[in-house]
Image (tube, rainbow, N blue to C red; front, side, top):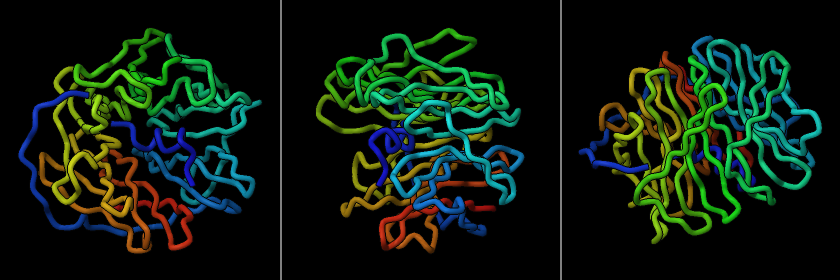
Length: 299
């Protein structure tokens, strides 16, 4: 199963004006399974416009390792000394980002520039197990989005530009442990995806320009079950909702029209995590044994 930190990275989704939504036909295209050789489970998180898929996998001991998939050739990415490494996105310039978990269970964001690792720690991030900084992605302008968990267990979204951090907190976000705001993606136009959890426990997904967030809710899912994962430069949003049986169902959202994204091999659910500017979607599906397999959906 996903660790709590890994699950948080895949559900990276503040405030909002509701928009009308409608259901459409299933997203067309060809599904291709992505399994890192020797891995127990594989999670595809991002894909750039060159077709390089990024993500992480679980070994037989349950540890997590980042990977890059270039046309079926896999490269493992491990931050030196880390207990676990979770790669999220590689931008079109080849800069890879993600986060790692140290021996004390604390998360630290990182940027991998051709094997040179730079650690990213947001001001205010907690230093106890389960806290720290979670980097979600870097756009082609070098702007990083993610969230951090403070010493009280509250989540805060952030944007990082050239070492300067800007906190992103939705006005209606709760301030208790396991509440708050997170960011999951930023495209080259500065549009973001993310979510915030209110004091009553409801989670609200959103997408759009910073400061002008629009609520996203797949009409096929129960209330407050939608999470947004990524948005490309054309404004196409992808994510998933959780049904009453706690299974994930992926979707793409084009200006309020939702199309299901369901890998036919995903007998126990499909989670959508990323989309390129060419419309290629990645994520993972869950098989009947509860194992994860990455997938690529080419339109």
